[in-house]
Every structure is written in structure tokens, then in C-alpha cells.
Image: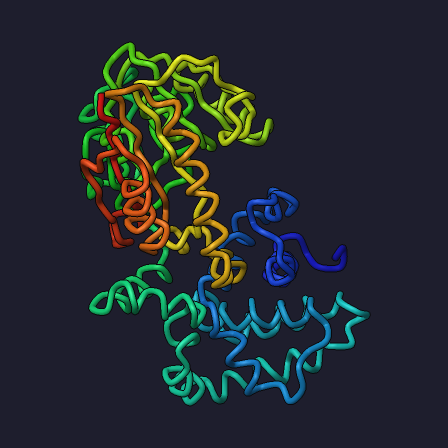
Length: 419
């Protein structure tokens, strides 16, 4: 590692390959894989990692045709996947990518794979057009998702599945939520428009950016005037819409964007739960930046004895764990980590959370069930089963957002408990 110049593409490719290799071994980016990359290289490494992981199926498809025998060295395999995605992306000159990937290979296993990396990448450049044409005939390489995922999309959205898959491979939009307690949305938008004339208001508190900006360049971010939050995610607080001074539970709260949005909109007696103490601490720090307060507990929402004092809640937000199929472009490792059988596991957890949290909703109260999924098994079908087996539950509103150029994919189902 120390032989690669700190400002070189070779070092970026090598760091990215090591992160991608860990994802392919079953690790999640949420485990802090990118945080272990030196800060100076982290933004560029993140760009390469995300580019590679979004192109599910393409790199493996090409390597099967470029390498005679499967590679046993996982780090070199990952390096070539990263380099191939970089070549397809076209953000760097092709000869530079090849040269720098070979340099990166030089610090792996005493450089014994330099020749192989050079030969494979140059062969790809020679055969690029024909290989890309071949890839059109391979479902995973063409649509950038696992075959089982595509089958699920096709079954649920026979007219839209290709559009959904395509959206899941693009870079996500960037939107923010203006903290109405600190500044008016129009006033903040006028400041942003000095940087981005094309930025525009959306929803109740949202602004859609013309192009992504680092948070430190967002006007008033440090002062708590604004937070980064997808426009689709902002629908949660708008739909739950608790009355001022009401008692509210955010049962799966981290990283806290929806909690903050609820508190920005009204004075509430709000309890926020999350399993991990570290995420609770981060949530608390973010609320402090925004000038907001809530009771935060590290607890399992399916075990009320850990956190419930017996007083029912007027409103509950259940943003449940899910397959994350609606945010795959934002968390591209999920396409590599999820398996078809995971759907049943998530469905069971979601059902348990629903059953438990329904018990703490007061008669006449409401519960908003939310996922960042597009699969009906986790969404409309889950709530259909719940309302059938649960007397007194009424599904008053539901909406399925599909990922597009403005927002990610989300599902919301608003349940009311009869008095």
C-alpha cells in the first residue's frame, strides 16, 4: 500500500477493491467499511465502490468471458471488477485506468497478478463493443439486478419492472428537508438558488437539488436549518401528521430523519427507539444540531417491557426493517447481499413488529407502517393480512412510491384503531 502515491488512481482502485471484496464476502457497507478508508481518499473510493456495486452482474459477466479459469485471489477479482466498471463509466481515460489498475495489482501478492490484470483489461478494451452486445442477452448483466429480484419485479409490476430496475441502477437524486423552526422553506431555497438556480420546492418542507452537494456546502446546515432527506422519506411525517402535544412513538428511528421531521412540524411528547446505542447517540447529536428534543432509548421495539411505561400512544411510526429494494441505488450492496429467501425472514419480523406496536396504540389512535421496499410481500400484502386478522384495525390510506428521478421507492400504510 505504501508504495502507491496518495493522490494516485491506483490507490483509489485498490481501496475500492478491498471494500468491494468485503461486500462480496458478505459484509455490509453499513458496517463502516468505507469509514476505514483514509479520509483523503474516501470520497473518490466511495464513488468507485458505488459505481461497481450498482453494475450488478456486468463485471462477473465480462470476467467469465475474459478469464479462462475462475480467479482464486479475491482481492484481484474485486480489483478487476472495480476497474471494469471504471472503464465502462468512462470518467477516466481508458489507458489511465488500465495502467493504474496494473499498478494497484503490483502491491497484491508481491505483484504476481500484474500481467493478468493488464491482459484482461486490455482484452476488454479490444472486445468491449461485442461484450456489451452479448451482455444485452444476459438478464442480470443487462438489468443490473439478481435474477430472482427481477422476477419479483416482473410479477409485481409487469408493465413497469424494467423502468424500476433502470431507476435502481442510476445515481440517486439529492433532496433536503428545511427545518421550519429555524427558517422558512422559501427563504432557504432562495439562498440555495445562488448555488443552484434549478433547485425547486417539493412537498411540505422539501427541496430537490439540481445536483448533489456536500453537506458542508448546504447553506445553514451547521446551524440546523436543513437536513438531507429523500423526498419519499419525507412523506412519513406528512402522512402520520400527529396533533401538537400528542404522545408519539418512532419505533425504528435511526438514523433519525423521520423523528426530526415530526418534531420540526409540531411540539410532541416523542419516544424514539433503536436497537444500537451508537446509532441512538448519533440520533441525539443530530437532534441537538436541529434544536430538537426527544426521549431516545436503545431498545428492541418488539419487547415493550424494555421501554413502555404503559401509557398508550396517539401515533406510532413503524419504519420496519425490509429488503431495501426501493433504495438499492443509494445502498447498492443490498443487490449483492440479499437473497430470495430473505423475503420470508423480513416478512416475519415485520409481522412481529406490527403485532407488538399495535398493542401500544390507544383506541382512536393511528400507526403508520413504512418500508423502503417495492415488493408487495412486505407492503400491501403484509397490511392486508394484518387487517384481516386484527379486529378494529382500518387501513385508511396507502401509497407505493417507485424510485424515479425525484425520490426513492417507499411504501406507506396508515392504520387507524377503532375507538
